[in-house]
Length: 350
Image (cartoon, rainbow, N blue to C red; front, top):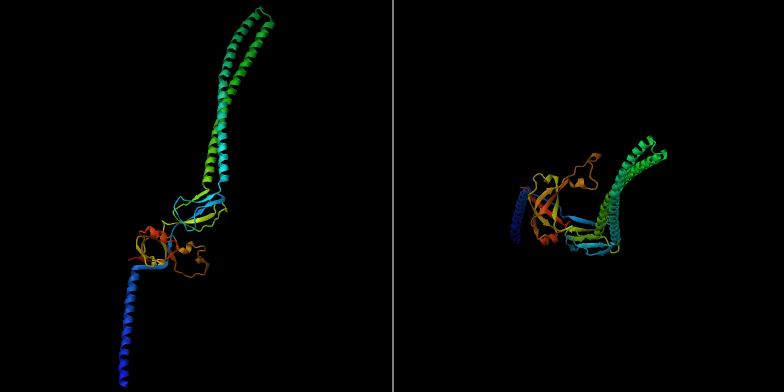
Protein backbone atom coordinates (compact mmCIF):
# COMPACT_ATOMS: atom_id res chain seq x y z
CA UNK A 1 0.00 0.00 0.00
CA UNK A 2 2.81 2.37 0.95
CA UNK A 3 4.66 1.48 -2.22
CA UNK A 4 1.64 2.45 -4.32
CA UNK A 5 1.38 5.95 -2.79
CA UNK A 6 5.06 6.62 -3.44
CA UNK A 7 4.72 5.65 -7.07
CA UNK A 8 1.75 8.06 -7.45
CA UNK A 9 3.67 11.03 -5.98
CA UNK A 10 6.70 10.68 -8.25
CA UNK A 11 4.87 11.54 -11.54
CA UNK A 12 3.23 14.59 -9.98
CA UNK A 13 6.60 15.91 -8.86
CA UNK A 14 7.92 15.53 -12.39
CA UNK A 15 4.92 17.28 -14.02
CA UNK A 16 5.16 20.53 -12.01
CA UNK A 17 8.63 21.53 -13.26
CA UNK A 18 7.59 20.72 -16.81
CA UNK A 19 4.51 22.95 -16.49
CA UNK A 20 6.59 25.77 -15.06
CA UNK A 21 9.13 25.45 -17.84
CA UNK A 22 6.36 25.55 -20.47
CA UNK A 23 4.83 28.65 -18.85
CA UNK A 24 8.23 30.30 -18.67
CA UNK A 25 8.98 29.55 -22.30
CA UNK A 26 5.54 30.77 -23.33
CA UNK A 27 6.05 33.98 -21.37
CA UNK A 28 9.44 34.52 -22.96
CA UNK A 29 8.02 33.95 -26.43
CA UNK A 30 5.11 36.30 -25.72
CA UNK A 31 7.44 38.95 -24.33
CA UNK A 32 9.74 38.73 -27.34
CA UNK A 33 6.79 38.96 -29.75
CA UNK A 34 5.42 41.98 -27.90
CA UNK A 35 8.82 43.64 -27.86
CA UNK A 36 9.26 43.10 -31.57
CA UNK A 37 5.69 44.25 -32.21
CA UNK A 38 6.08 47.50 -30.28
CA UNK A 39 9.35 48.17 -32.06
CA UNK A 40 7.32 48.46 -35.28
CA UNK A 41 4.07 49.99 -34.00
CA UNK A 42 3.05 52.93 -31.84
CA UNK A 43 -0.20 52.19 -30.04
CA UNK A 44 -2.67 54.28 -28.06
CA UNK A 45 -6.19 53.92 -26.78
CA UNK A 46 -6.49 57.66 -26.11
CA UNK A 47 -8.29 58.20 -29.40
CA UNK A 48 -11.78 58.75 -30.72
CA UNK A 49 -13.75 59.14 -33.90
CA UNK A 50 -14.01 62.80 -34.80
CA UNK A 51 -15.82 64.85 -37.43
CA UNK A 52 -16.93 68.30 -38.49
CA UNK A 53 -19.93 69.56 -36.51
CA UNK A 54 -21.61 72.63 -37.99
CA UNK A 55 -23.53 74.71 -35.45
CA UNK A 56 -26.54 76.49 -36.98
CA UNK A 57 -27.33 79.90 -35.52
CA UNK A 58 -30.08 82.40 -36.21
CA UNK A 59 -28.94 85.36 -38.33
CA UNK A 60 -32.11 87.35 -37.64
CA UNK A 61 -34.52 87.43 -34.73
CA UNK A 62 -38.07 86.17 -34.89
CA UNK A 63 -40.59 83.63 -33.67
CA UNK A 64 -40.17 80.01 -34.76
CA UNK A 65 -43.05 79.23 -37.12
CA UNK A 66 -42.08 75.78 -38.43
CA UNK A 67 -39.58 73.05 -37.53
CA UNK A 68 -39.22 70.65 -40.43
CA UNK A 69 -36.95 68.01 -38.90
CA UNK A 70 -36.84 65.52 -36.05
CA UNK A 71 -34.02 64.97 -33.62
CA UNK A 72 -31.23 62.80 -35.09
CA UNK A 73 -32.75 62.95 -38.57
CA UNK A 74 -30.54 62.70 -41.63
CA UNK A 75 -30.80 65.80 -43.83
CA UNK A 76 -29.26 66.89 -47.11
CA UNK A 77 -27.44 70.14 -47.75
CA UNK A 78 -29.93 72.89 -48.62
CA UNK A 79 -32.96 71.25 -46.97
CA UNK A 80 -35.25 73.73 -45.20
CA UNK A 81 -35.10 72.96 -41.48
CA UNK A 82 -36.60 75.97 -39.67
CA UNK A 83 -38.92 78.78 -40.80
CA UNK A 84 -39.23 82.00 -38.78
CA UNK A 85 -42.17 84.41 -38.85
CA UNK A 86 -41.22 86.75 -41.72
CA UNK A 87 -44.05 89.32 -41.64
CA UNK A 88 -41.90 92.08 -40.13
CA UNK A 89 -39.21 91.54 -42.75
CA UNK A 90 -41.73 91.52 -45.62
CA UNK A 91 -43.08 94.89 -44.44
CA UNK A 92 -39.54 96.28 -44.32
CA UNK A 93 -38.98 95.04 -47.87
CA UNK A 94 -42.20 96.73 -49.05
CA UNK A 95 -41.11 99.96 -47.36
CA UNK A 96 -37.75 99.81 -49.11
CA UNK A 97 -39.44 99.17 -52.48
CA UNK A 98 -41.80 102.14 -51.90
CA UNK A 99 -38.82 104.36 -51.07
CA UNK A 100 -37.14 103.27 -54.30
CA UNK A 101 -40.25 104.12 -56.32
CA UNK A 102 -40.37 107.55 -54.70
CA UNK A 103 -36.70 108.15 -55.50
CA UNK A 104 -37.23 107.14 -59.13
CA UNK A 105 -40.19 109.53 -59.36
CA UNK A 106 -38.03 112.31 -57.92
CA UNK A 107 -35.46 111.66 -60.65
CA UNK A 108 -38.20 112.12 -63.25
CA UNK A 109 -39.29 115.42 -61.67
CA UNK A 110 -35.68 116.66 -61.56
CA UNK A 111 -35.17 115.78 -65.23
CA UNK A 112 -38.34 117.65 -66.17
CA UNK A 113 -37.00 120.68 -64.30
CA UNK A 114 -33.79 120.42 -66.33
CA UNK A 115 -35.83 120.39 -69.55
CA UNK A 116 -37.85 123.41 -68.46
CA UNK A 117 -34.73 125.37 -67.53
CA UNK A 118 -33.05 124.47 -70.81
CA UNK A 119 -36.13 125.66 -72.70
CA UNK A 120 -35.78 129.11 -71.06
CA UNK A 121 -32.20 129.54 -72.31
CA UNK A 122 -32.91 130.34 -76.03
CA UNK A 123 -35.57 133.05 -75.30
CA UNK A 124 -33.24 134.70 -72.82
CA UNK A 125 -30.39 134.70 -75.33
CA UNK A 126 -32.71 136.03 -78.04
CA UNK A 127 -33.80 138.85 -75.75
CA UNK A 128 -30.14 139.79 -75.25
CA UNK A 129 -29.55 139.87 -79.01
CA UNK A 130 -32.67 142.00 -79.55
CA UNK A 131 -31.59 144.50 -76.90
CA UNK A 132 -28.09 144.64 -78.40
CA UNK A 133 -29.59 145.55 -81.82
CA UNK A 134 -31.87 148.13 -80.21
CA UNK A 135 -28.96 149.62 -78.29
CA UNK A 136 -26.97 149.94 -81.52
CA UNK A 137 -29.82 151.93 -83.12
CA UNK A 138 -30.25 154.09 -80.02
CA UNK A 139 -26.51 154.85 -80.01
CA UNK A 140 -26.71 155.95 -83.64
CA UNK A 141 -29.67 158.21 -82.84
CA UNK A 142 -27.87 159.58 -79.82
CA UNK A 143 -24.86 160.60 -81.94
CA UNK A 144 -27.10 162.32 -84.53
CA UNK A 145 -29.09 164.11 -81.86
CA UNK A 146 -25.90 165.26 -80.23
CA UNK A 147 -24.73 166.84 -83.51
CA UNK A 148 -28.12 168.46 -84.04
CA UNK A 149 -28.05 169.87 -80.52
CA UNK A 150 -24.65 171.44 -81.17
CA UNK A 151 -26.09 173.04 -84.32
CA UNK A 152 -29.17 174.25 -82.37
CA UNK A 153 -31.40 172.20 -84.70
CA UNK A 154 -33.24 170.51 -81.81
CA UNK A 155 -34.13 171.42 -78.31
CA UNK A 156 -32.44 170.22 -75.15
CA UNK A 157 -35.58 168.30 -74.18
CA UNK A 158 -35.44 166.25 -77.40
CA UNK A 159 -31.78 165.38 -76.72
CA UNK A 160 -32.52 164.40 -73.13
CA UNK A 161 -35.25 162.08 -74.34
CA UNK A 162 -32.92 160.09 -76.62
CA UNK A 163 -30.25 160.06 -73.93
CA UNK A 164 -32.71 158.55 -71.43
CA UNK A 165 -33.75 155.96 -74.01
CA UNK A 166 -30.08 155.02 -74.52
CA UNK A 167 -29.45 154.58 -70.80
CA UNK A 168 -32.64 152.54 -70.37
CA UNK A 169 -31.69 150.22 -73.23
CA UNK A 170 -28.22 149.70 -71.72
CA UNK A 171 -29.80 148.79 -68.37
CA UNK A 172 -32.23 146.38 -70.06
CA UNK A 173 -29.33 144.72 -71.87
CA UNK A 174 -27.42 144.17 -68.62
CA UNK A 175 -30.56 142.72 -67.02
CA UNK A 176 -31.06 140.37 -69.97
CA UNK A 177 -27.46 139.15 -69.73
CA UNK A 178 -27.95 138.52 -66.01
CA UNK A 179 -31.12 136.57 -66.82
CA UNK A 180 -29.21 134.33 -69.26
CA UNK A 181 -26.60 133.57 -66.58
CA UNK A 182 -29.36 132.83 -64.05
CA UNK A 183 -31.13 130.44 -66.43
CA UNK A 184 -27.85 128.63 -67.18
CA UNK A 185 -27.16 128.36 -63.45
CA UNK A 186 -30.61 126.93 -62.89
CA UNK A 187 -29.95 124.28 -65.55
CA UNK A 188 -26.76 123.26 -63.71
CA UNK A 189 -28.56 123.14 -60.37
CA UNK A 190 -31.29 120.94 -61.81
CA UNK A 191 -28.71 118.57 -63.29
CA UNK A 192 -27.03 118.30 -59.90
CA UNK A 193 -30.42 117.50 -58.43
CA UNK A 194 -30.79 114.70 -60.98
CA UNK A 195 -27.40 113.28 -59.95
CA UNK A 196 -28.38 113.47 -56.29
CA UNK A 197 -31.66 111.72 -57.02
CA UNK A 198 -29.84 108.97 -58.94
CA UNK A 199 -27.48 108.48 -55.98
CA UNK A 200 -30.54 108.19 -53.76
CA UNK A 201 -31.84 105.46 -56.10
CA UNK A 202 -28.63 103.46 -55.57
CA UNK A 203 -29.02 103.85 -51.82
CA UNK A 204 -32.66 102.76 -51.97
CA UNK A 205 -31.73 99.75 -54.12
CA UNK A 206 -29.11 98.74 -51.56
CA UNK A 207 -31.78 99.00 -48.86
CA UNK A 208 -34.00 96.66 -50.89
CA UNK A 209 -31.17 94.16 -51.32
CA UNK A 210 -30.51 94.23 -47.58
CA UNK A 211 -34.22 93.78 -46.79
CA UNK A 212 -34.39 90.80 -49.15
CA UNK A 213 -31.29 89.31 -47.54
CA UNK A 214 -32.79 89.70 -44.07
CA UNK A 215 -36.01 88.11 -45.34
CA UNK A 216 -34.06 85.14 -46.74
CA UNK A 217 -32.51 84.56 -43.31
CA UNK A 218 -35.95 83.66 -41.93
CA UNK A 219 -35.62 80.32 -43.77
CA UNK A 220 -32.83 78.26 -42.18
CA UNK A 221 -31.39 75.50 -44.35
CA UNK A 222 -28.94 72.68 -43.70
CA UNK A 223 -25.36 73.91 -44.30
CA UNK A 224 -24.10 70.36 -44.96
CA UNK A 225 -25.47 66.85 -45.33
CA UNK A 226 -25.54 64.93 -42.08
CA UNK A 227 -27.45 64.21 -38.89
CA UNK A 228 -29.27 66.99 -37.05
CA UNK A 229 -28.67 66.89 -33.30
CA UNK A 230 -28.72 69.03 -30.18
CA UNK A 231 -31.95 70.87 -31.03
CA UNK A 232 -32.81 73.56 -28.50
CA UNK A 233 -35.73 75.43 -30.11
CA UNK A 234 -39.49 74.96 -30.03
CA UNK A 235 -42.46 76.17 -32.05
CA UNK A 236 -43.37 79.72 -31.04
CA UNK A 237 -40.04 80.40 -29.39
CA UNK A 238 -38.45 83.81 -29.91
CA UNK A 239 -34.89 83.42 -31.18
CA UNK A 240 -32.30 86.18 -31.23
CA UNK A 241 -29.57 86.82 -33.81
CA UNK A 242 -26.59 84.63 -33.03
CA UNK A 243 -28.58 82.14 -30.96
CA UNK A 244 -27.50 78.53 -31.45
CA UNK A 245 -30.50 76.45 -32.58
CA UNK A 246 -29.07 73.03 -33.48
CA UNK A 247 -26.04 71.33 -35.00
CA UNK A 248 -25.46 69.20 -38.09
CA UNK A 249 -22.84 66.44 -37.91
CA UNK A 250 -21.22 66.25 -41.34
CA UNK A 251 -21.17 62.60 -42.39
CA UNK A 252 -18.53 63.13 -45.08
CA UNK A 253 -15.75 64.35 -42.78
CA UNK A 254 -15.25 61.40 -40.41
CA UNK A 255 -11.69 60.92 -39.14
CA UNK A 256 -9.82 59.85 -35.99
CA UNK A 257 -8.06 62.07 -33.50
CA UNK A 258 -5.43 60.06 -31.61
CA UNK A 259 -3.53 61.60 -28.68
CA UNK A 260 -0.06 60.04 -28.71
CA UNK A 261 2.54 60.58 -26.03
CA UNK A 262 5.33 62.91 -27.04
CA UNK A 263 7.77 60.03 -26.61
CA UNK A 264 5.97 58.11 -29.40
CA UNK A 265 6.40 60.75 -32.08
CA UNK A 266 10.05 60.19 -32.96
CA UNK A 267 9.39 57.75 -35.81
CA UNK A 268 5.86 58.88 -36.70
CA UNK A 269 5.19 60.89 -39.84
CA UNK A 270 2.31 61.58 -42.29
CA UNK A 271 1.49 58.79 -44.73
CA UNK A 272 2.17 55.87 -42.38
CA UNK A 273 -0.50 53.11 -42.32
CA UNK A 274 -2.76 52.76 -39.28
CA UNK A 275 -4.88 49.93 -37.89
CA UNK A 276 -8.08 51.23 -36.28
CA UNK A 277 -10.25 49.26 -33.85
CA UNK A 278 -13.56 50.90 -32.94
CA UNK A 279 -14.90 49.75 -29.57
CA UNK A 280 -18.49 49.91 -30.84
CA UNK A 281 -17.69 47.52 -33.72
CA UNK A 282 -15.05 45.08 -32.46
CA UNK A 283 -15.65 42.60 -35.28
CA UNK A 284 -14.71 45.04 -38.03
CA UNK A 285 -11.16 46.17 -38.75
CA UNK A 286 -10.62 49.64 -40.21
CA UNK A 287 -7.52 50.92 -41.94
CA UNK A 288 -6.29 54.48 -42.11
CA UNK A 289 -3.35 56.77 -42.74
CA UNK A 290 -1.60 59.37 -40.62
CA UNK A 291 -2.71 62.68 -42.12
CA UNK A 292 -1.31 65.50 -39.98
CA UNK A 293 -0.14 66.60 -36.55
CA UNK A 294 -1.68 69.29 -34.37
CA UNK A 295 0.06 72.64 -34.09
CA UNK A 296 0.39 72.26 -30.29
CA UNK A 297 -0.19 69.72 -27.55
CA UNK A 298 -3.65 69.19 -26.15
CA UNK A 299 -2.71 70.96 -22.91
CA UNK A 300 -1.99 74.19 -24.79
CA UNK A 301 -5.52 74.21 -26.21
CA UNK A 302 -7.19 73.53 -22.87
CA UNK A 303 -9.33 76.11 -21.08
CA UNK A 304 -6.65 76.64 -18.43
CA UNK A 305 -3.28 75.73 -19.99
CA UNK A 306 -0.56 74.82 -17.48
CA UNK A 307 2.01 77.47 -16.59
CA UNK A 308 5.35 75.97 -15.60
CA UNK A 309 6.68 79.32 -14.40
CA UNK A 310 4.70 79.25 -11.14
CA UNK A 311 7.36 77.30 -9.25
CA UNK A 312 5.22 74.18 -8.79
CA UNK A 313 6.64 72.31 -11.76
CA UNK A 314 5.90 68.62 -12.15
CA UNK A 315 6.98 67.10 -15.42
CA UNK A 316 4.12 65.31 -17.15
CA UNK A 317 4.36 63.48 -20.45
CA UNK A 318 2.38 65.59 -22.94
CA UNK A 319 0.12 64.24 -25.66
CA UNK A 320 0.03 65.40 -29.27
CA UNK A 321 -3.26 65.14 -31.23
CA UNK A 322 -2.68 63.29 -34.51
CA UNK A 323 -5.28 63.31 -37.26
CA UNK A 324 -5.84 59.96 -38.98
CA UNK A 325 -8.02 59.58 -42.05
CA UNK A 326 -9.98 56.44 -42.86
CA UNK A 327 -9.16 54.54 -46.02
CA UNK A 328 -12.17 54.01 -48.34
CA UNK A 329 -15.13 54.15 -45.96
CA UNK A 330 -18.41 53.00 -47.48
CA UNK A 331 -21.61 54.99 -47.13
CA UNK A 332 -22.90 52.52 -44.56
CA UNK A 333 -19.93 53.02 -42.27
CA UNK A 334 -20.02 56.78 -42.78
CA UNK A 335 -23.48 56.72 -41.20
CA UNK A 336 -22.51 54.28 -38.44
CA UNK A 337 -19.33 55.99 -37.27
CA UNK A 338 -20.23 58.93 -35.07
CA UNK A 339 -17.90 61.52 -33.52
CA UNK A 340 -16.97 60.62 -29.97
CA UNK A 341 -16.72 56.82 -30.36
CA UNK A 342 -13.67 55.36 -28.62
CA UNK A 343 -11.04 53.66 -30.77
CA UNK A 344 -7.63 51.99 -30.47
CA UNK A 345 -5.07 52.89 -33.10
CA UNK A 346 -1.81 51.21 -34.12
CA UNK A 347 0.55 53.19 -36.31
CA UNK A 348 3.16 51.18 -38.20
CA UNK A 349 6.30 53.30 -37.88
CA UNK A 350 8.84 50.73 -39.17
